[in-house]
Amino acid sequence: KSITTDMATLTRELEKYARDKKREIETLKIEEEYRREFVGNVSHELKTPLFTVQGYILTLLDGAMNDKTLRKKYLQRAEKGVERLIYIVQDLDMITKMEVGDLNLSYSEFNIVDVVQSVFDLLEMKADKKSIMLMFDQKYIKPITVYADRDKIQQVITNLVVNSIKYGSDDGTTEVGIEDLVNNKIIVRVKDNGEGIERRHIPRLFERFYRVDRSGARAEGGSGLGLAIVKHIIEGHDEKLYVESEHGKGSEFSFTLEKTK
Ligand code: ADP
Image (cartoon, rainbow, N blue to C red; front, side, top):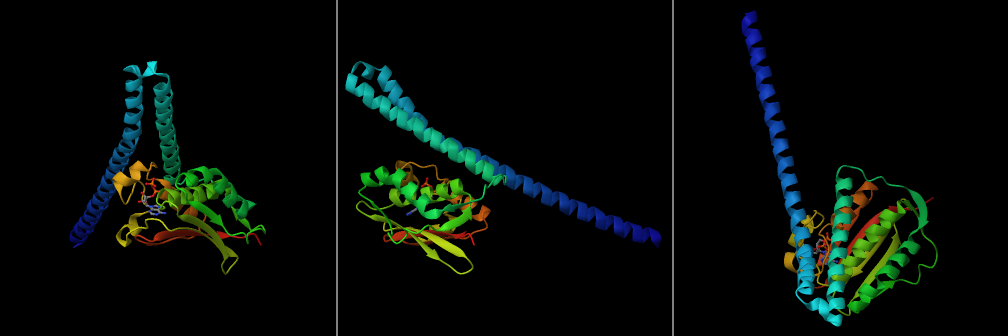
């Protein structure tokens, strides 16, 4: 009898071992697939600007170098390509750190109104090029002090405003608003009246490298990582991130923050 019991226990244990191993292999397979996809995406993102830069250099070597105006024009374009590469690598660096949980938030008290203002100052020229008006309601003359990582929140607002310009319509507007919520929270909204996003894309928008229109988005530059970075930063703060959009009408991205008491 005891042998039968032992056999039954042994069989159960063996079965459990096999199940655990199978699960482990499944997880490894998913991770491997994920890594492969990541590397594939990265090389794809880097290829376009690299070929652009190479193209300008080859044209220069081919004779354009002897023409003073062409020389300057092509060198400037090559430099733009290198600048894009730097942005992509910086974004990649950030997202990789964030994905291993290395967010390193450094909390302090700061005035969120100042942060919006500096983002606007930095992006004014970019907006001007598309005749997009950056609006921040004048009622925010009083400071609104929040407790968060200032640089990271500036990055969030920058990414959202950059997108509102990239996917905004010419002569459109980008409007930033701040409102009080309950429980000492505020909500920061970034709203545009640009191309908007079809409903079916919304659930995947914050995935890294996800783009609604792959060709169109690439023409506008960017790494496809902007919103993934935004999501990591806001969730790292234990705050909420929302998106509302209507295709052809515009989008609104918003997130919450904690005010200082
Ligand atoms: P990208 O570098 O492509 O801009 P993001 O992660 O910042 O990458 O955004 C992902 C995609 O979400 C974009 O490619 C675009 O299709 C869509 N998107 C983001 N912001 C907006 C917006 N304000 N209006 C319309 N579409 C947007």
